Amino acid sequence: MWLVVWYMQMNLAVNGLSLTFAVSLVFVALIISFHEKIGLEKDMLISVGRAIVQLIIVGYLLKFIFQINHVWITLAMMLIIIFNAAANARKRASTLRHAFSISLIAILTSTGVTLGLLVLSGAIKFVPSQIIPITGMIASNSMVAIGLSYRSMLTQFKDQRQAVLERLALGASLKQASIAIVRESIKTGMSPTIDSAKTVGLVSLPGMMSGLIFAGVDPVKAIMYQILVTFMLLSATSLGSVIACYLAYHSFYNDREQLIDL
Image (cartoon, rainbow, N blue to C red):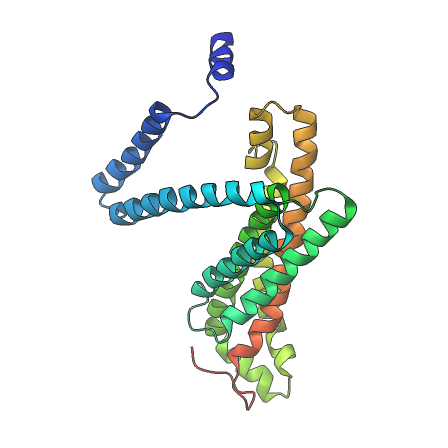
């Protein structure tokens, strides 16, 4: 065991050989997909290719931004992250009207509020090396939560169409007719983050905590940062899901407050 620890301490730098071994793991997944006739080989190759290109570009871009350390460039990068998160959340909304604008408002608000509290409390500083990675973490988790909420709403409005129509026929408002679906969709969006928080430390050692420990930071300090991240993500996903769902349910009705066909 001590030999493994010594080897890791002496060889922390990623080199061509280590990347080659990492690529071999992708071939394992490709072989499994081909052997089991799953049909994901093309998607795997495309996703791996895109990941490599995107990460290389982002790596050099972040290095440039960190060196400049300019407020407006940092803000522009944050907005790019949020804009892309909203665009990806929109893809999961199928035919939902105004999905992009709703996603943008929800992600911008959840990210802005969470970051604002972290900066004001002194937990992080408004410098590119801290604010940009945290923005990415918040926006991506909010994006996933909103995407799950959209899918839940689409499914439930389709499955419970008759029940919604009956509530409307009895004089219920749009909110009263939709509130059960809205609440269940919010719950669906938040569930992965809540489940992750339940098992953090016992089942999983999340990326930020593992990265800090790997970099040599005291595990206790790494845990404190992970607690901060966990609370941060719970806040962001709850805000994002609530805002998105309460704005989105109106899109299931026309101007005459009639339920549209899905």
